[in-house]
Image 1 (cartoon, helix red, strand yellow):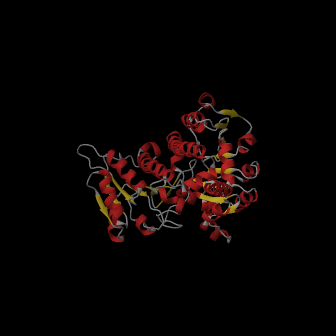
Image 2 (cartoon, helix red, strand yellow):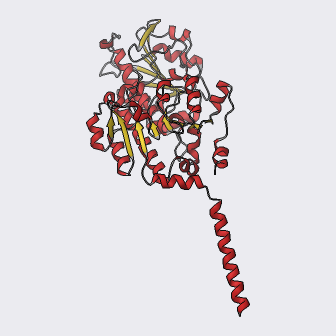
Length: 415
């Protein structure tokens, strides 16, 4: 009997030892992060310094949601002015409004729209987290070097995925750019913008204007909807038949669609009043679908809005412009080449960004910190181009001749 009891006691002790071993090998840093998050996250939202950027990363409603979950938002005074949000709006939503820019950039998590400048990075502490646009093709290597030196973890919004595999920031900004591009074209067709005085949609007895859209992705789909809503005749070109089918199913209306065959496209451009460029390259530059010769054949006073300009443009005669000087004329055709169209409607765009970022912050706090968030949400990892100062983005690595690390292996090795 004694031997049986002793045997049971030994088995219990052995079981406890196994449990202790499992506890020892648990990711200790992860447990520490959970404890820290119980006091809430601290997020800084600075004022955008680029004169072309009018959006703000978090709206007052987003700040209210984040604050309700026990987190603190430090908001720089005036950061919402260009989106018509006042400091009072943010203060009432629960943010700590400050005029001290350095205080904002010293927060453990910084969220902004444009990529940070060198001066802004200098204000940051070691080991911080920053979420912003990446602008990989326009990035200053000195800024990247300083972020790496400060062991910063950085996330690029345009690379951020959701659970369905989509890109929520790119999707929402593309929807805005598609609709706004048609309104921009309509402005430059009118006399107010020294155009040829044409209404985009026709009226009784007068045929409608013709709009040619290059690309059947999100921008193209929303441009087509806006054009049709204004009564224009729409023609959409794309070399991907699946995208054309998806566009037709999405707008529930029969419109002209075609593969971008040079001869068919050239004939459409000769009678077009508006051309919307909405083509993106798979990697790097957007393909040129409209040649200089095709532009020469277009009607005088026609308008080209090249939304693809931030990827080099899909019209050969397109050039980069800005909100202060948005157009130029070539061959009597008006060209609009501003890369940041959503900033024209900064309040709507800020709401769209906030819908993504507020939920992102709440999830990070709920899961117990950014590291735990990356561990649980593997689809988010592609958006991280720096992890604790280590480069994890292949494109940046190839561009600057640097070795990019595998983030999955980095996270696993730090457990």
